[in-house]
Image 1 (spheres, rainbow, N blue to C red):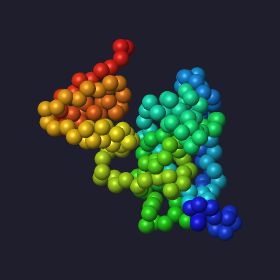
Image 2: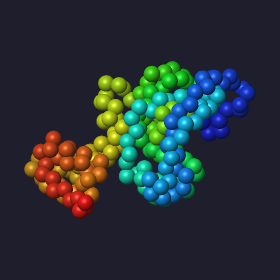
Image 3: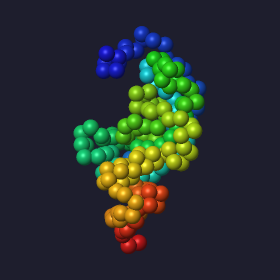
Length: 206
């Protein structure tokens, strides 16, 4: 019931936050990134409400999905009604952050201060130094799992792996790859090397 309808404000005590500012990239309108993006300093909201956590973003990649969202005006994926941001919005679908403070309703059994987290959904706005996010939108990852820069592109890693794994390939097979200059394409090429597959990578002219 809480997940679906939320909690009435006033029935719990908010967790106060210090009066500090954080850097944030903002997309003012649809267009080319160099024309529509600004970098601003914004005041942190005064308190964490139910289910919110304060996250310090440590690694935020720039992916084709981010550029697509900026150029199309906040749209992500095929279903624009479900994944669209309102102007001005903070871009960034992926990234790795560290939990600085838990708000009310966030249990230590699921999310602790100091945990590494990655986004679970699109348009969370990871291109900022400090972000207030919902606990339900974050996934805790073990620190020993991989480095920060690798975790920042874990979605692309999984995509590249599934592309090869679902094809039932065996060592020596040849993989033809279009658009190999992107993050997923580069990871496919590297995985081919590890899996003893031959890769033919096609890239566009500079």
